[in-house]
Amino acid sequence: MYYIFPVNNFSHEFKTPIVSIRGFAKLLKENQISEEDRQEYLDIIISESNRLAELSTNMLNLSKYEHTSIVTNTHAFRLDEQIRKAIVLMESKWSAKDISLGVDLEDIIYLGNEELTQQIWINLIDNAIKFSHIGGNIDISLLENDGQIIFTIKDEGLGMNEETKTRIFEKFYQSDPSHAKAGNGLGLALVKRIVNLCHGEILVESEIGLGSQFVVLLSSKA
Image 1 (tube, helix red, strand yellow):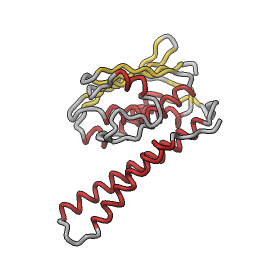
Image 2 (cartoon, helix red, strand yellow):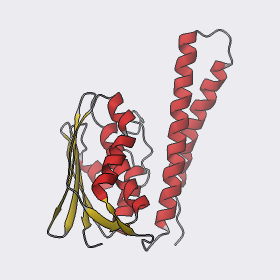
Image 3 (spheres, one colour):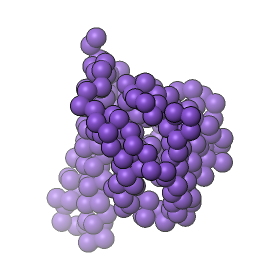
């Protein structure tokens, strides 16, 4: 199987930050700009560079996992500890929006590939932060019931309409074409692919204005 990105979306997602970086870099060469404008332009360049780096990383990961059919390098590890580390890794993002996190994680040993599962938690937490309001709440839980591991992340953010819910896991799909919310439409596609590789399931519930809830189901006997 050969993996092909939709060409128009691929080109647009790369071109937009590159054009922005080039434009503001040119403005910085001008002598008649205030120090305040200079700092603003530098912040935009840094932000767009980060966006480009994230896009490249997600595209490479998604391409790699699209060509993967069997999960290898598996071993037993603490899933709850991995999720805690993912939360800490994302601290700068949720702190910047003054988001309160409710975390309730059972001690769970999981047999799997740590690199793969880490991508699930990081992308889902990042997505919840992205669409949460400033000062909002995000609840994260992990439990085991009848041989099934259940990870739930719930935010109180923007929520999604029915069309978005049916397309949210498509590559490059974004419910906000204006890019008002940073993202590239690959994070959830990556999550979906990894969950499938782990023989799991991902469910989503959402309502406009009331937030979204993602549930990942994995077998504790993986």
